[in-house]
Image (cartoon, rainbow, N blue to C red; front, top):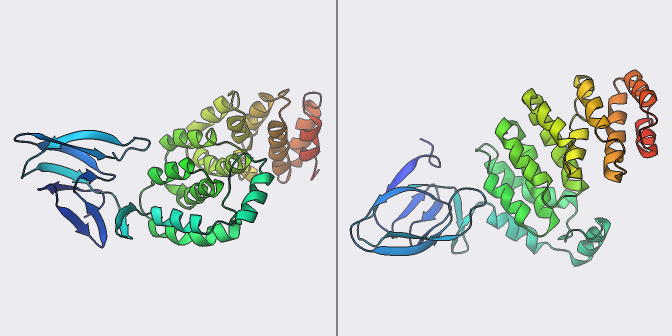
Length: 303
């Protein structure tokens, strides 16, 4: 039996269901539960709850104010610590935030053009902290709630944590998850997250070639970060690069004058030149009048 995916009957409002030291309290509120129906006798009792759907807000609902409550609740994995009931990742964020380095925070934010606040944690230290937490849930189903929380946090290390989690479980992603990845790319966008997510996008497209069409669509989108990911998603493909698609996507981005686009074009060509320099040289010659100087410089590095 899968403790966290089966439905359980709840008899009374104050009943607590305890499984394997993971606690969910059925009391004056449900935390991260799905409610699948109930039977009431008289009266109503209002309470606040979260649904299990990502992005849903706290809301007030009515439940029967009766001694015997017949309903079914789908449990979500929660940890109990510090006297409260919390999602597994709450303790992770508490630990991260306790390590804030004010001096490094200012420097790291400045390096990123002050687009985002930082805790000031170097990548090595961040990975050391988050790795044990992610390892404990890596074998379970993809937790998009956790990723959403990572993107809601103000400090940039939270987004890096979400990306690291996705790297760990990326083989579990399915075709339908591309829409979620798209939302991450266009939210709190900058080169650091988009250049990490393009690797995850690349693996998903490789598993589901039908998504080539999505990449082509992204290459013409108004959002430059979707364009950048579309240009670079094949960076890890080596001999398996779809050259026809690469050429079409790059051609869709000629003349933008956008630094991050021209840089991405150069990188994609430079990377492919490691396995097929002849094709890259030919591409540069055929499109020299349309390629930016930056793109040509980057693309020619290994030629």
